[in-house]
Length: 350
Image (tube, rainbow, N blue to C red; front, side, top):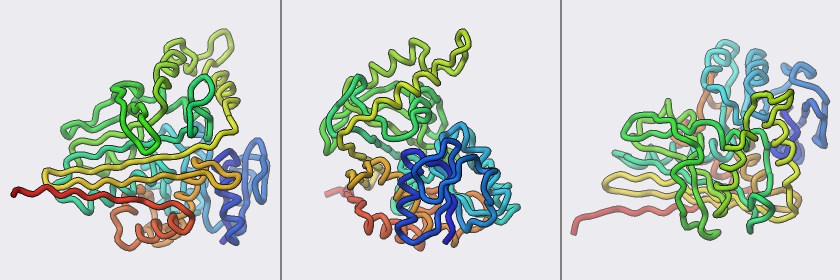
C-alpha cells in the first residue's frame, strides 16, 4: 500500500518508519524536512496526494485541519492523530462527497481511549459514568517540570490552555483544564490528575450522562505549569512583536531528557450493577519512546479497519462499538507489544 504520512515530528517519524518496515511504500511530507522514509520537504500541496492509497496525519494541531481537508477533498482515506482545535467531524461532508473515509483523533487519547469507551458502551447496560485517566511521563520526575517532551510542544500547551469539556448530569460543561486536581494511585505510583479536553467526538456521539478525561503527571507538575500560564507565557497574543506561546514552545522542545518514558491509561465505565476497567501500560522499545509507540501503533492499527468503513468521518469510538473491527485493532496492538488488561466487577444483592 502507498501511504502518505503528513508530518515528520516525533510521532510522524515513528509511523513512517513503522509502516515502511512492514512493507508499505511510504511518502513523508514536512515543511521542515526530517528523517522519514520517502521524505519530501514541503506541505501537502508539494506531493501528489491522489497517488496515495491512504494518508496518516501527524501534524501539529494548528496546521492539521486544512491539511486534512485537502487530503479528503482528493478522495484519499485519512487516519489522523493530530490534536486540532477545530471540530474534526465538520469534515464529514467533505469526505463523504469525495468518497474518502476519515478517522480523526486516532492517537492514544483521544483515540484508543475513545475506542475503549465504545467497548464499554457496548458491554454495560445503563452505563452512567466514564472516567479516563491517561499520561505519558518519564519513569521518574526529571527537569524543571518533572516532565520530558515526547510529542508536539504546541499541542502540549493546548492541553493546558484549551477549555476542557466534560459531561456532568447529561450536560456538557467547560472547565479550567488545570482544575479539580486529584491524586490517584497508578501502577507507576501516586500521580496528580487534571482535566483535559480529551472527550472530543464523544461529546456528540455518546449519551453517557457523566464523562471526563484527566491527564496524569507527577505531583508538583500542575503548580509549575499553572504559574507559566498565569504569567502569560502560553498566550498566543503578540507582546511587542513576540508571541509568548511560540517562545515557550521552543523552550519546551528543549526539555527532552534521555530517560525512559511510560504511557499509562485507565478507562473505567460504571453502572448501578457493574464496573469495567481497562488498563494499558506502554513501555519504550529500542529507539522509540512509549508515547511514539502508543500513539503511532494505535494509528497504524486502524489501517486494518478503515477500508471497511463508509465514506465520511468515523470517530474512533464507533470502531470500539464494532465486534468486527475492534478485534482487529486489539490483535494488531497485541502483536506489537501493547496489551490491554480488563477488570470486571459485578454487584449483586445477597
